[in-house]
Length: 203
Image (cartoon, rainbow, N blue to C red; front, side, top):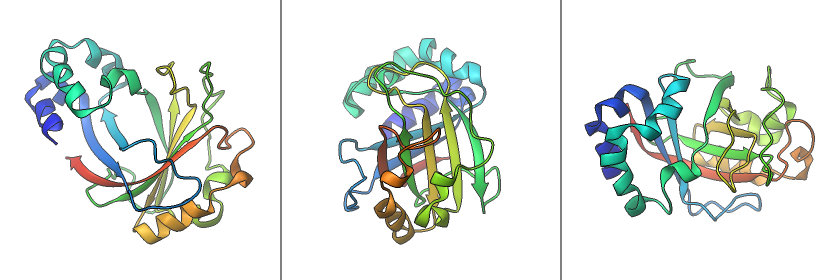
């Protein structure tokens, strides 16, 4: 939250970042498919695609936010950030909805490879694997297609958000993740899954 507050001091950051959601890993969640190697994920909605590149060289960012990053994160933010194109595939919520504090989100980072390979295409409809079993209980499913080469170790093709109304539904979905969805054009591949809850958001 302190780091996010620094961002609000930077006028250029405020113009480029439309929304922020801090998704902290639910530590008590237990399912074979869930990773315990990461603390969480920050989701940023940018004003436009150019903002994704411009923000890294912005003087305010370099002077105010970058020096604070080692205090908050395991590395500098640029070294684990992925620029994606967002696509809404399914929703029982308003199309413009943003993740708010308390929202439970299962995140899937799909198809990692050592040598990053961009996705051939983004799905036009929600792939069957992404709605199998208890995943179909999600109130919203968002596909984030990684469109630029990611930092080393983060060579994923898709990042999928499954929004749930509560922890029970989300945990049921996580426990049902398995090999059945691993293969195919939109399968898990070498994937990483995290069950998270939004602990801080703006607006």
